[in-house]
Amino acid sequence: MNAPVSTPTSAPALTKNQSLVFDVLDRSDAPMSAYTILDRLRDHGFRAPLQVYRALDKLLEFGMVHRLESLNAFVACAHPESECCGKGHGHGHGTVAFAICESCGHVSEFHDHEVDHRLGAWAKAKNFKPAKTTIEIRGLCGACAA
Amino acid sequence: MNAPVSTPTSAPALTKNQSLVFDVLDRSDAPMSAYTILDRLRDHGFRAPLQVYRALDKLLEFGMVHRLESLNAFVACAHPESECCGKGHGHGHGTVAFAICESCGHVSEFHDHEVDHRLGAWAKAKNFKPAKTTIEIRGLCGACAA
DNA sequence: TGACACACGTTATAGCATAACGCAATTGAT
DNA sequence: ATCAATTGCGTTATGCTATAACGTGTGTCA
Ligand SMILES: [Zn+2]
Ligand SMILES: [Zn+2]
Ligand SMILES: [Zn+2]
Ligand SMILES: [Zn+2]
Image (cartoon, rainbow over all chains, first blue to last red; front, side, top):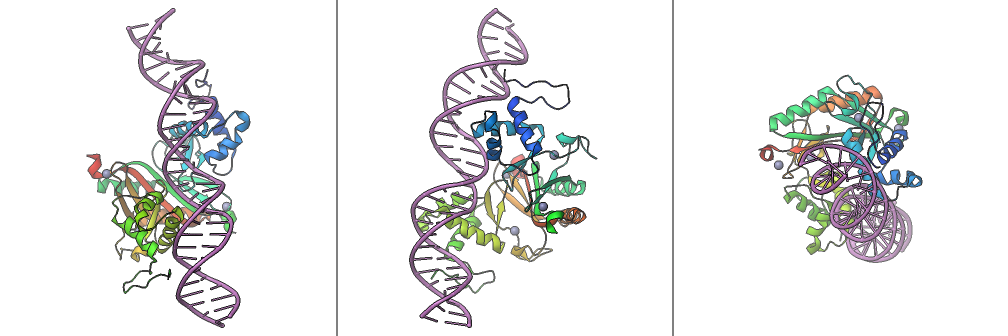
């Protein structure tokens, strides 16, 4: 009864909790902490942080959500389904970078081949095997810099 | 009596607490959390997290310590006093990147002009004003990748 | 002297994340 | 059909990370 519900669309089937969490994030125009998500979902039966964290773990695994390390917060993936270089939400290859406005909270997700390439080259030269790369720029967005 | 003690060397004068915290970090071969630092300094009179966090805030401000966002931990700056492009510990310009081994904990601090340039170009194009940029690569170091 | 800045110490609290238990449902052999 | 393995779920308790708010002492500079 708690198994994922298959949908006619693409993307992995989400369970009820996963859908609820993703919808909250997707509708938000700013990153949300796990506890803020929890509060938003109290009316839907959420009572404990683990319900949120477990859903987030899966959504992260599916590539539908990103974690912002410098904020301890989460955002829905903002990639179009088909990017220049990748498979959209899966981020087929390449690292994603985030520009985070410290005033309005808006987050821009982007990708830069050359950055990827340079970091990859450094890793190769040092014989370092990258697993996950975090790039986050904190500052003021165009609107807020005024 | 608690004012910074001037030293004959360069660098900003550190207070006793700041020195103690920096020394602990500098001697460590892996990042340390604030609470781990606290435990290491119990014998030196440290009793509360704030004593550590206040020292860390200053050391971060001085550029002598970096915060690893993906670990919620801290490392002493590993830059040589005079880098190719900068003023050493102050990181005169340019962003620093970290490669973090998830097996042995070793951290390599480096800088890449081109990465900087590309992120700067993106920001300029989007009219985004960067304040602080985080670049962290988690993975396996050469020794651990074996 | 008084106003100020700054480092410090302490207690309490807030915010983020996981451990450990048990139950229910699904899946996929045998 | 039945059993074992897997997965999702709910709950309670706990641990880790960080800051708020208060007061003290000290050096600086009108
Ligand atoms: Zn994305
Ligand atoms: Zn903004
Ligand atoms: Zn450094
Ligand atoms: Zn290693």
